[in-house]
Image (cartoon, helix red, strand yellow):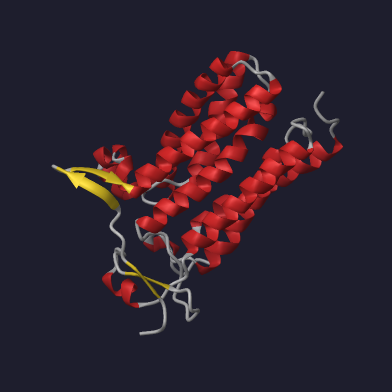
Length: 267
C-alpha cells in the first residue's frame, strides 16, 4: 500500500438508543450559528434593526436546506429518489448539492427583500460572506462522512477512506478533495470579509456577490477534475454535472463584477 493517511472516523459523534448526532449535522448547524454572528455584526455596523436578521435567517435556513436537498435529488439521483420519495426528507443522511443552494438562496433573499423592501444585491453582498464560511463547514462534514473524495493519488497526503461506500476505495490513497475545497472556501470567506471592511461596509452593489460566484464556483469547477464521480452517469463525461452547473454561475458572477465595477459605491 502506498504511503498515505488512514482515515476512518465514525460519522456519528455519539448514538444513544438509536438517536445519533452526526458530524455532518453538527457542522451544518455551526455554519448557521457562525453565519448569524457575522451577519449580526454587519447589521449592527450598518444600523439595520436586528429583528430583520432573525427573519432573514429563517428564510435562509429554509431556502438552503430545501434548495440543497432538491438540487441533489434532481441533479444527481432523480430516478432513485422519485422511486423512494420518503428518502427526500432524510436530510441528515447527507446528499445536499451546493448548486441547488446557489439557486434557492437568492430566491429566498429575493422574497425577503420584496417583503421587507430591502435591495436584493445589498442583502446578497453580505449573505455570501457567511455562505463561503458555510461551504468550509459543509466540506468538513463531508470529510467526516468519508464522502465526495478525489481520484487515486501517489501524493503523501493521500487519504485512505476506509468507510467509503465502495470497500475497495478504502485501499487506494485518494485526493482529500473535501479539504482542498474546504480550505479554498475558508480563504474566500476571509477575503470577502476583508474586502467588505476595506470598503468600510459600502462596496458597490453586487461586487461581493459577483466575486463570491466567480471564486467559489471557479474553484469548484477546477477541483472537479480530480474528484471521483458522485453518480454513475458522470463516468466518461468530459465535464461532470458539478462543472456544467458551475459554468453559468461563474458567468453570472463575472457579469455582476463587471456591472458593479462601473456602478457608484453605496451611499
